[in-house]
Length: 316
Image (cartoon, rainbow, N blue to C red; front, side, top):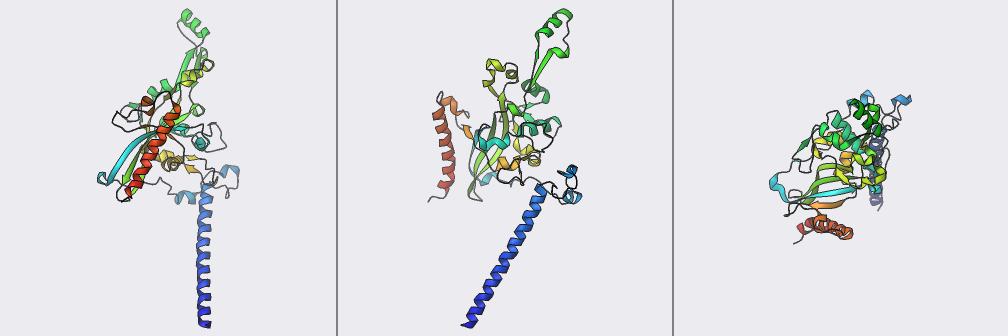
């Protein structure tokens, strides 16, 4: 009997030791992650050091977007493309919208729109498109007509009629910025991977949606109701840019989340407005018109249909 008691006591002690080792390892990993996430705030000696990585941190920094696994066409049992609207008025989608003050030097966070436009201007994002099928490329000169509206004042018109020129002071310029973005539209592909036996999702493109730039000049006329797609970005080509840009993580402020992770993990709320179908991918509002409630039910029906694909996979 005594031998049994000694054996049980020994096993309990060994189990407690193992648990302590695992806990200690977890604390160390968490501490390292938090230190990196705080961007040297705990090791800084001056305010200028905050947000600047040390040489050791740069040497060990191997932070890259999680690569997509190769998917062979033969492994696709089923797939369906969907187009969704991410409404920035919803609280869960705020990380894609804020901070709208892009001149705030006290924070390294930027809204998603500002991240894309800045990298388009500096050449990091080389190609943008006019549609979600990525068939027609657009240049920065093409986008200028969508993002900027220029208007001549009455004094400028009088000067042009008299002298044939207009001074810059008589030209008003209205530029769309992050605060004007009301929606994001995304195109993605749902598919069944036969090797993993599960339903997966892949983002293909993202597009900012805002009122026309000229509506800022005539805001009192109610011209801001007409929303337009500004440009489409092919998501896989912009992953490195979106991975480096961080969004606010409301669950843990010491661990900001990248836009790449946020979109890939679908940490947003959306509404399906179009699906791949035989009618040329027609939108929901094209066959259910003037009834917003029925359009919402149709969107939920499409979502439920996609979810049931994986459930049906395991039914015998």
